[in-house]
Length: 461
Image (cartoon, rainbow, N blue to C red; front, side, top):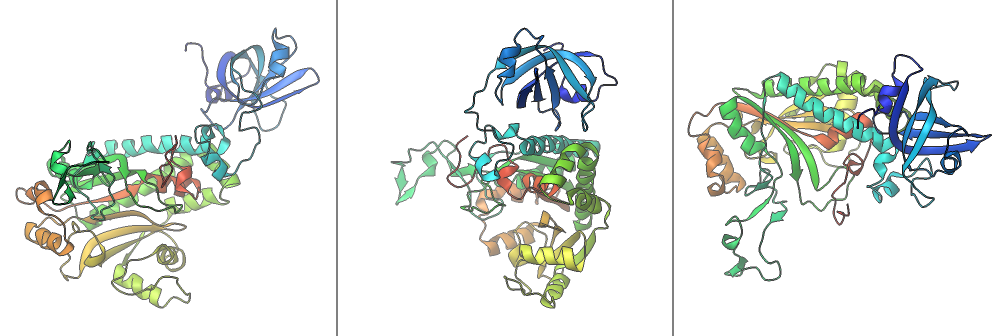
């Protein structure tokens, strides 16, 4: 709408005295001594703009009875604010009540538990915390694209519906047009040949395999999109629908992969420090004390590299008792990862060259025959934040590993074709977008960094 000023722009105006029209929602309404104060927020920034409504308004009585949550359009003049902590306030010349709100509006109190706010996910973006979360999320998403675009990476939209299971975990949501009450059967099993795609399909768990194909044509590519996992988990770190960032580079080895991951992670840390400072300071004050200092220390810290074998040795001699066992050949748990990064390295660390049995079939076998060229980036507070590898580009070793892992080669014939003609070393990694947001905001539950979380038995909104 012409003539509209965002509250962020009004609060950063060069000087007072200008006339503006702002639109937003009343966070608080206070009336006393012939004046009404309205804290108006439009989501453009953390801070609200204080609107001062006086009896000269034609509808002052109606304005003085406004309810929290009402949608308003206010025209007035910016004046210097006498109150501490705010530069300007808006002396209202007209207040239009676009959408009223009564006392049944659920966000009357200033503080609500995150658990309660999940039950009203359609309204929680209007709170301070979730306003900050989703501004940071939006800003980070744009920076992800900027990072890769500035480095010449091609953005690839990999399929959401797929017939393959990239991780081999079998945790796919099925996509079908068959009648669930009476599906066609052949020898007692569902006949997916009669389905829409003529085979069993599901929602993707990763765009990596398709991304590899594009990397072998465009050299450097990335995917950034929704992924799905039908894992019946109710932990604070799992959701059935989440977003993944997955770059892939041709003619690259594990060292180049780790170098890109380090550059990327530093870039995002510095971005929130520079461009999301107001929201970050809110998180520092209300969610995690010392958040800004923690992110700044990561942005400036050296990233160490440690062999998996050495990491296990460090854990074996640790003067603490772990819940999960430590032994060569076992995967590292969050408690192990946090110990390594917080107590041993005291900073970010890449753990590299894992046993092949605990990693995916597509990872490149090292010369020792026991390990693969895999890497995980561990950071303080959460442990693993990025996982990646150099991919197995040698057809004979790839097919051998697929057979060992029980991966259906017929269903991945196209993937094997990429190793038959013009195969080259290539590498990539995955970063869960929600896990990144949790790390950079201090929020501790993945449900609180996704607009509308999908978890077991929850898909209301």
